[in-house]
Image (cartoon, one colour):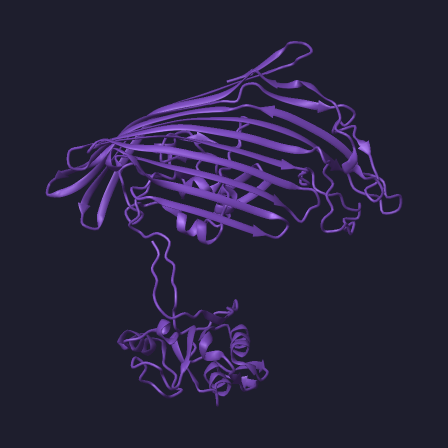
Length: 578
């Protein structure tokens, strides 16, 4: 949801907090200050840094205003009085550590004080409550964007239509409005913007997400059964063009996500058809030949709007500051939604994403001198071979059925099948450079082919019931998730083994021009069977004990299976792990 209010301005500030804690600004002892005469915003920033206080100044009030110099031993009050002399500005303590700078002659009726009088913390709080205007009224605000509210319904951490306000878990929602406003185009970029999540990229298509120090590998689609990401050859990095929002739950969600890691769950909510016709075309271009276009069409199709559709097509072609490294991405997404009856909704859809990263330079990084000094290579230097590539195709087919019953009940069936094919070919570097001989690093190569599949199904019933004059919630359901990564094959690169690589001179050899070598089957790494599966039965009940107090009880009984077999192509010996 976007709220637009009139009159713009930004709070700039001199918001520098020192490590020292002041017992109270009103009684603070003198301190040594050295602040030159300068523009008021710079002077207040320096005052905040030296005093350890937080200062707010409306940018519109600081235009063209110069502060007086303060050099010597002053209390915060004395320093502010000297800084603001002859500026037409006054100070006001919001609390013992926070100061607002406002005009002596107010522009609105809400400001009645005209003297540079120090208010103590208690008095400042009283004055703030009594005033018809607050700090925000000292500035003008043109546009405020609020993305989402506490009353947004979630599909992660709950299957009973709970709102963010009602869910006692740490959840962050990245809405479509925020995704568009910040030009977030991938899941990696979205999670970089997510509170409590750390992102570590090994490759563009092999990114690790961490929450509370534990890797995030559990995905949900529209709140369905738990999928697994970042293993068994499966690496899913969806484009945000097909997503309505992203929900991230930090912490344990064992009831609905089964045997996933306790770091949390990432729930991807797909776009759905709208009841009114909309056509949107977004085009963008940026540095290093970064071009992107998204076409999004939705609306009613037939049966007086009971049948609706949505189609999204996206294309991205971008370069980077590294020489030769490029990414090309093509996405198509389509979904149909039909009101079979007034209480029955059926949705089907599919998405196809093809991403090709060529000449990626990150495998193994760049070498350094053996004394750890930088080689001083150009910023655009790229060690990757021209044939190095990481290509992935992902196809997702899904269906959802919702049947409403009673006053609040809803029965949901959510099924998906996701197929991937991946091809990795790269040449990397290891070893340091001798500062005298300029020798030392070696080239090594690796390659792999993957074709994982995931099958997901979730059936749940949820709603409300009345008991003892209060409304309570319930959820019961079953789910099943299967991941088959069998057929993954790793290859050796002839003459470029990791422990017996090819030496090169990074300053003279144009290693990126080396022809693509022969890739031979690695006899030790082949996985004819590489799979995991889990199924479970779950139930929760939320008892409203009092108006502000709810007790939630729940449990899950699940079964988890893991089966991996590797085969030595030379000897035929198999190794089995269960």
